Each structure stands twice: as C-alpha cells, then as structure tokens.
Amino acid sequence: MRGPIDYIIVGFEGNKFDGSILQSLSDALDKGIIAIVAMSFITKDQDGNVATIDMNESSDEVMVSFSEKYQVTSNSIDQDDIDEMADLLENNTSAGLLVIEQLWALPLKKALINANGVLLAEGRIHPDAAAELNEEGEQ
Image 1: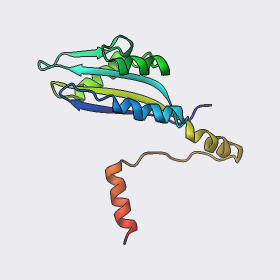
Image 2: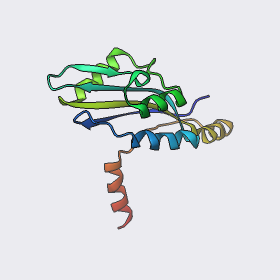
Image 3: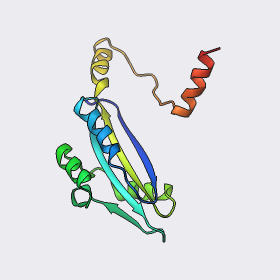
Image 4: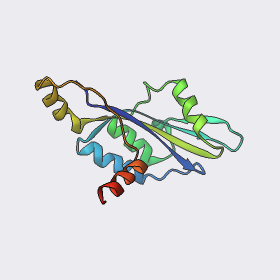
C-alpha cells in the first residue's frame, strides 16, 4: 500500500540552485513524512537549450551527497516529463521535479479502508486559494 503521490515543479532564475532546499527535504525524509519516488533537475540556457542534470554526476557536493543518501532516481521520469518541464521555463532558468509519496497519510488510509470508507473525491487547494479560505474564516 502506498500513500498519496504528489509532484511539484519548482523553477529557479539564473540557473542558480541553493542547497538549503535539499536540507529541508532531508528533514521531511528523515522524519518519515515523505518518501521520494523520483526527482529530476533541468536547465535551460540563454539560447533555449535544455539539459538534464544527473544528481549523482553533479559538481555540486550537496546534490551528490543527497542523492547517495536517499537513493534518488529519475527512472520514472521520461522525456515527455522533461519536455513539459522545459515548456514551463524561460531561458536562463532551471527547474526541479519532485515526485513524493505522502507517508504521513498511510495510517489514515489504512483506517479509512478498515472502516470501509470509499474515496468520493480528492484534490488540492493551492496556497494562494487557501489564503482566501483564511479570510472567509475570519468573518
């Protein structure tokens, strides 16, 4: 049984990557909140050429260390996924694709199954829309 699986794509201007993001991700992994299903990075140069960055072969020691510790793979990310990421990017930017399993939800999922619960709908409220919910709750 798996928990819910989500993905995010995050862009970075100027092809600069700050390893602090990997530290925050490490914290969530170490606490067992999430598991990485797949992860990939791409860059788009000034001329619009796209390249995939292999974390294991990166010159960034933080990336290599993270990849080795958490056994990060991009096996389930195909060329169509890379092309979709690239379409979202302006020239001279980069992006990371993160596919995660929500491990925190497993006990809840088990309880729902054991109670014969049936999923009727699911979705996600974007943080910008969540601000509207907070405003409505204050009235």
